[in-house]
Amino acid sequence: MLGSNLPLRALVVFEASARLGSFRAAADELGLTPSAVSHQVRSLEAGLGVDLFERIGRGVTLSQDGRDLFAGIRDGFELVKRAVEATRRRRSGRTLQVVRLQTPPSFASRWLLPRLPALLAAHPGIDIRVNADKDQRPNATGVDLAIVYGDARAWDTRATRLLDETIQPLCAPALADGIHGPRDLLSRPLIGTRGNAMSWRSWFRRHGIDVDRTGAAAMELDPSDVAIEAAAKGLGIVLESSVLTEDEMREGRLAAPLPGHAISGPAYWLLPSATGDGQAGAELVRTWLLDRAAAEGLSARYS
Image (cartoon, rainbow, N blue to C red):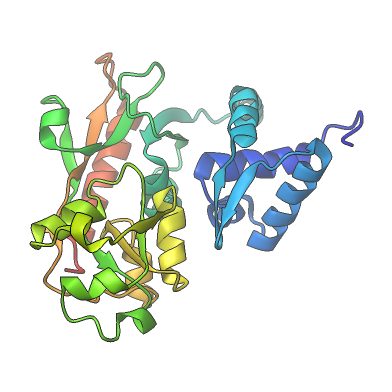
């Protein structure tokens, strides 16, 4: 039982894990080890008597109880953070300019989070507040800048292209042996993710293969962060974005078994505040993100 003592440490760890969609990302943010994060979450689950996360391989996704708890504590944590920051600023005599950035969850944990230290170092006067939300509504109140994903026609003329991507089959190097063409994938374990820009069915169709006749099916793992980690661990072949898998490709944890079969996917776009009251801090963040993307190369490297 949790008793009358509020398990603040465990709740902090849970909030970070739920917000970032990853124990690993939460560990990085909180300065803990992934095992310490997992221990705190399990302790909270034991006290509540519910499973807050569904564990799939080495990845996790929120259960219904977890989603309910996160919805209940999210705003409270944000208020606490604001109060602490306001006190700190008054104490130091510094005034930080708050920039609220909205981004898709997997993009936040896999592309944005590793680059945040460099952004904050370049602009120490800016306080970045990241809201990683699946609901891509850049017109939401309190959002200064949004990173959205999709076709150009989905966004108005205010959008600026940030990152292009390609989508292709990726797997642990050991699973790539013996794969010489698209049909070879039919006998391999496939990993799909609900809501991805391209399904396995669509990918096979583009290569002249009717999966309805072959009976090929993919296990479903969500979100992309979980599916990518599962593929890197050798669970199967994932159809994923070059942007989200950049680290695994560079480190050699994922390989493209069919080079030359990459397909151009949607892009990531930057949208300013819908209210039109742009601020200097948001413009600095926008310019930094565009410059960083350009320096790294807008086009995918692993095709």
